Image 1 (cartoon, one colour):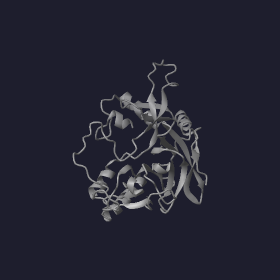
Image 2 (cartoon, rainbow, N blue to C red; image 1 turned 180 degrees about the horizontal axis):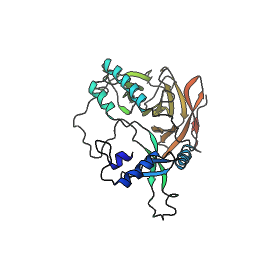
Image 3 (tube, helix red, strand yellow; image 1 turned 45 degrees about the horizontal axis):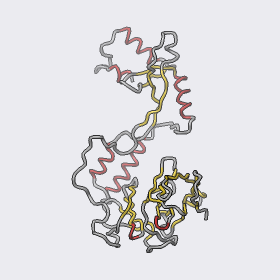
Image 4 (cartoon, rainbow, N blue to C red; image 1 turned 30 degrees about the vertical axis):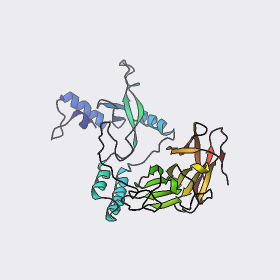
Length: 318
């Protein structure tokens, strides 16, 4: 760390430092009771007592917002990701340049305890006691952050349909909403066909994953769905079955029937946050309602919901 901040020559010697300064640096590096960490700004470093650092980091971990790891899992994650992407290239589901693009970003998501330099002017007497504080810092999550000055290519690529209006698996009929999953599968609300269709990368036709049994209100039917999201925890779809005035859930493993989650609601939009709160836009009531997802039992991969609001909408417990 000190070498990076102060700079060393090819022989490992510090540049532009006196003998006494180099001696101080050597003493710091050999002292096992201190830790040297980069500050949060200006490329500076901060030195503090190891016990104090561990105590402050432990206080952050005690919030249960993060999990302490014994080692950095990034290398293992990147290795597995490369294997999976290579398999997709072999199956000709993605191009080699797409794989290279996904692997370009070396900053996998992680959170670290980072030292923050105190802006307070301290006297020499209390400088050692009140030198730094701790804050959490995280790397951006996702394959790439879109810069503010990004320019989009003028020509788009069709990833679903492209064969005009219709009801075949190569067509859509008034699609209303989409959800793009982590594997780049595009789930489309094929509203007037009363179904949800999955279009995988480079696919020439879609696959019905919910509905598709005609317009109706039975558990194996949808009626003009408006929105869809994927719940990764339960490997299922959550769908705004709008004309049926309900929100339903369809397992991606068992695509034959759905389960009603919420009754009597004019749902026109869905979103789920990182804590698995389901946010539902209710057009009739002019409000956004929030529900907490929970597992029904270990043998059933579907989810139940707990209403965290005081409204009149019904949760289906059947």
